[in-house]
Length: 392
Image (cartoon, rainbow, N blue to C red; front, side):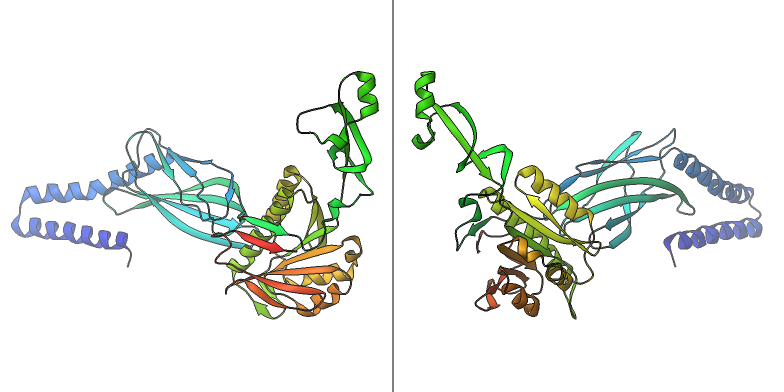
C-alpha cells in the first residue's frame, strides 16, 4: 500500500470520526469542521495543479569526461507564480550507446525557496561510452499528501565518457618503423629523415650541426638549416576487440570497459613517443582502421569509438582482420581484447608480428604464446592505479 493511499484512508477516517461526533452530540462546530475538511483537499489539489503548470526544467554542465572521473551536471528547475507545495520527483533515464544499456529511475528533489533552484545530478562514469540523459516527467504531491500531479517533460542531454588514460610507456623490442627512411611523406610536418628535405629556415639554438646547409649559409651570410621530411609510417596497428562475449565465453561490462581503457592508453602512449599508428575496430560488421598521428586524429578516433556499439562477439574482430588479409599492410599488430582467441592469434602470427594484450581480473603477466606471438595479461584492477610498461 502506497503512502498516498494510507494518507487518504487516515484523512477519510478523521472526517468520518468528526462527522459521527457531530451527529451524535449535535454540535454545530463539528459540522463546520467537517465541511472545512471536505473543502481543504479540493483547494490543495487546485493549488498543486497551478504550481505544476509553471514548472520548467533544463540541464547544463560538462559534455565530456574521462572514465572514473567526476563530471558536473546541473539540473535547473524554475517555478511559475506558485511554488510546488512539497518535494518533487524527477523521472529520468540514461542510455549508454556503446553497451546498449539503459537505466531508469526517479530522483527525489527537495523544493527550495525562490523561483529557481539548482541541483547537481549524480553521473555514473565507471564505464566509458556516449550517453543520452533524458527527463521524461516531473511529479509532486499536495501538502496533505492526498493527491499527486504529473507533468510530462522532454529534456535531453548528450555527453561522452571517454576511456581512462592510464600512464603507459611502450618498450619496443625491435627498431621502430619511423626510424627507417619512409616512402611516404607528410607535406605539412617536418621530421628527421635526411632522404627528404621538408624546407629551409634560419638556425635556432639547439639545432643539430649536421642539419646546417653550409653552402647556402655562406651565400646568405647567416646559418641556414634544412628541415628534413617526416616519414608517414602506419605500419603499427592497434586492433581493439571490446565485447561482452568472446566465442562461448561471457565477460563483465568492466572487462569491455578495460579494453577501451587499455586501447586508448596505448594509443596515447605511442603518440607521445612519436609513433604514428592505426587503430582498428569493428563497426556495423565492417573493420575500420583510423590513422592516429596527432592529438586531433587521436581525439577524432576516440569520438568515433564512443559513438558506436559493441560487436556481438569479440572474436569477430580478429577473424574479420584475417578474412580481409589486412595483415599485409602492417608489420606490427597489437590486439587488445577481453579474451584471447588463441587459434586466430596463431594463424595471424604466421603472417605478422603480433602481441595480444588481454584485460584480466587477476595479476598482470605473461599468459600464453609461441615464437610468433605472445599474450600478455593486464590487470583490470591496476589499469587506473599504476604506471605500465608495455613490451612490443
